[in-house]
Image 1: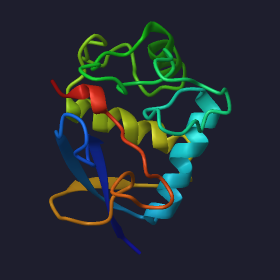
Image 2 (image 1 turned 180 degrees about the vertical axis):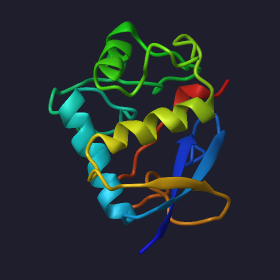
Image 3 (image 1 turned 90 degrees about the vertical axis):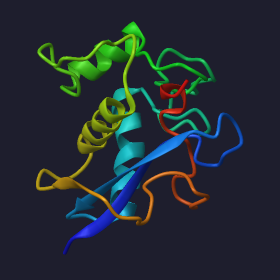
Image 4 (image 1 turned 45 degrees about the horizontal axis):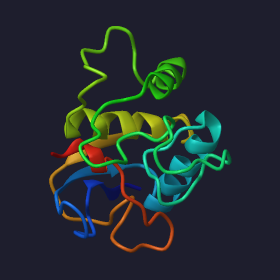
Length: 153
């Protein structure tokens, strides 16, 4: 079975800078499994792409160098988070990215690879252009957090 899922980066609730972008994917697993995989990857790596809830188990507080893109105009990756993402193969040495400025498309790719760490090995996803259920945000009960807030200026 195939599922349409949406990853929202930025201020989906429109209570801050009001800028966001949505990436639509076709997945062979449902959104609930993907949401849990995000939380599991946070626990596994000790980093997160949100600051509202701590899924790492490390009691991170706002502004931690283990939180990625959570502050206003914060589109870079800290040395700590970059090292962890590299260790887990999310970012490779030959990737053509500037860790001081990640664009939203690169951010979406990094988050999906991050989620992949805790998905079954047969998980597949591909980009789509449709309006469907979001992985994060939009007041869902399972993962009501912002990703990539700092990716927008």
